[in-house]
Image 1 (cartoon, helix red, strand yellow):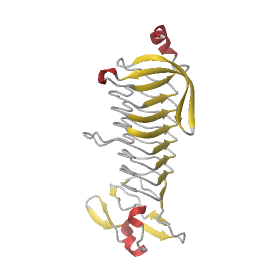
Image 2 (spheres, rainbow, N blue to C red):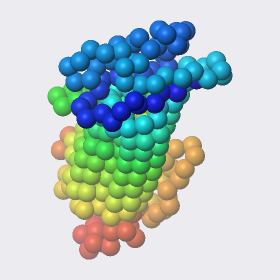
Image 3 (tube, rainbow, N blue to C red):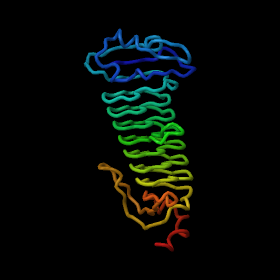
Image 4 (cartoon, one colour):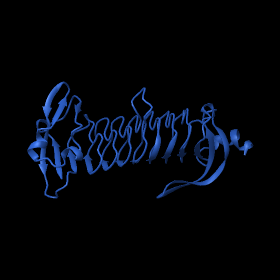
Length: 271
């Protein structure tokens, strides 16, 4: 295993896609130290910004310590191994990841898990904006894997989601699940307005307060509980909404009935 400790506080963004078990595998400590990295427009090597130590366990797993909130693209495209980040981390962590595990013991920057294909990302803080979403203009969203968030997530998360599972213990911002077609999202607390616009499939479960249900979703019934994945079931009862009908969608929104009494006068008469 390799332990990387930042040598200073970073004031400008650092691009560090080389911090990846796939890249480290089979390399000597000297070779790893010489991997290219950029700080702003400066072309540097990894040892210019990090103290690098190797432990004798023989793996290419990585632990990062120090202030790396401006360090981007850690674990980009990784297929195996583990990365543990002790603190906040910058944008694009785990982008295009297909295997392995990233644990963030802090907050994550925007676009964490963008275009995720597999593996697990655990965030023991907040998930930031654009969690698991593609770049603007792209329709290639998350297609597999698991993202767990202990805190809350920001705006435009899980856009164009086409598979996998996202579970959030906190709140979610607006436009969650935009153009979602497959997969599962579970929000244990509250969700802001404009949930799942243009949704065509998949399911989103909200156990807290939902600011509004878009008029292009129709109520279909009430369900006592909802299976999130093989390990977790959410207890209801939940209103079940189908949509987005403007997209001829067959997605499902499960919205807590007890947490949203304001929905009763609107939808109970249709049940």
